[in-house]
Length: 464
Image (cartoon, rainbow, N blue to C red; front, side, top):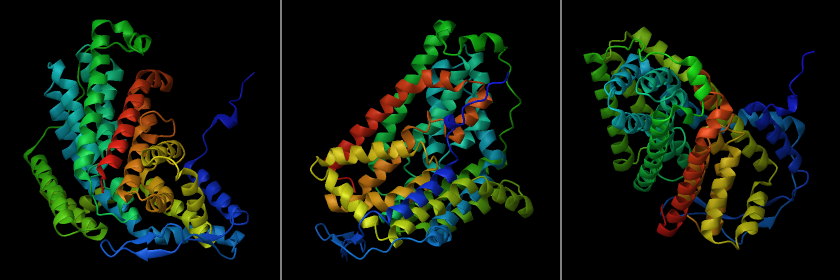
């Protein structure tokens, strides 16, 4: 007799969860009293700020059944700039990833063969750059087999090979200094300058990466001394093999030109943001130029170049469209005239707490929500419209709401079962999820502590 798995154990689809939240927001408009704050324009920044103490009740205007569905196209419309920004920038990275990235990474990792002490730190540093510059996550999956092959050749296990690739990228993603898909989106929604606070983020990134390197190296050396210490020892015994490496693509002169174009393009973007005050439109245009130049110097014909562009854009359809669906939640709350009521209730509940606890509370809220909305861009779209007014009321910098979102979104990506990147590379590596949790849970606790201390420091330093 076949035993069926209990359906309630299965985590619902992300879009299902968001649609349920949209319905709940609509129902809430019949229950929660309508109200709003007065808002004034800040002369220095031009931002509309909530006036503390100005909340007042207004006539209720509950959302109709049909309005629940019109909220989705309206959400897509309101999020159009961010949605197309995600599509276009991902398309550019689709061009750049065609051959050059693979060849460069394979060349760099293989050059470390026989240098066990340098393998893990330099590999994790290399992938962290991809994490903080282009939000590398699912992209790490293709590199996991080579990481495992090299790790096993040096006496480590598949967990080490997987960790030195994926946790390197995760450390960079956590730092997020130039990540256009999380920090860029959240800062645009919070109306703070793009990539502002980069110095503070860089310092935190160093701590996050250093802790991850120490953690993975400690585990790897323990396994090398005693293979039975591996969390997948039984699997390693079954899968034991020689150190033969898979065929690696050759790093050519054209690939080097692609890297040069990419480095120049990213540097130009940074200069544009800080010197000329570029925002999403200018940044997207610059990325497009970088992508086309990279494709041409990489030897791609225009047809193949745009095929790669479309492939790159297609890969983020899930994450890009979810921004619009998440914005639909805000549309419903605004049309039901209860978004300010929710902000008022939340702010009233925590206003008596120290500011540091408020920000840490935001962090844990974002970390919890990441279990259900694993897309960073989507989570930003769903939560920033509520978190930002709370910071205004509490007299906190809006950058703190961005930091709380960024760290909350990042810290759990390497352990939650709803992460497509995590489940993808574990499947490729042949590592059972529960074994991975046994390996990584202490790292997640360490990262959580670093995030909390960083947020406390951000409040004390007034990071803006």
